[in-house]
Image 1 (cartoon, rainbow, N blue to C red):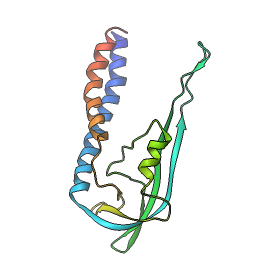
Image 2 (spheres, rainbow, N blue to C red):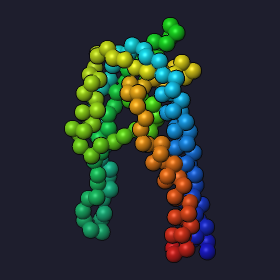
Image 3 (cartoon, one colour):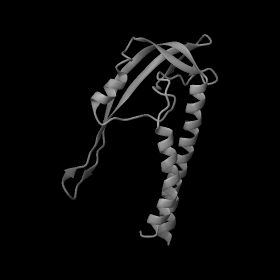
Length: 160
């Protein structure tokens, strides 16, 4: 019974955190898109960031490492006479990773360094400008995982 409670607390807590982040980002994304105003922006950094996990199974003598790629950019813009810098491609802090470098590079293709582009900003949160005025599925994925994890943790905990 103790293992079930510990499992539920750990994974249930993670589920609640994912649910909270998903709901807040879903609301923010909708608000940002509804109140978006165009501003001129300058791309100051644009590259693909590659990350490889260091997951090695010593018992089997092999690597289970995975490599992911994500667009990494920053841009400057001015709102009400004040300069800001943002790294948001979409109107959410939940980013997207890609299995191939080419896919991440394709996302960045319209945003080379020194390009003058159009950004979007909600003037009530001028520090959170974004470049692509479209919603993403990231917040919904977090909400679904947040709802599913606590009951799944309770069920799995019964058999631990």
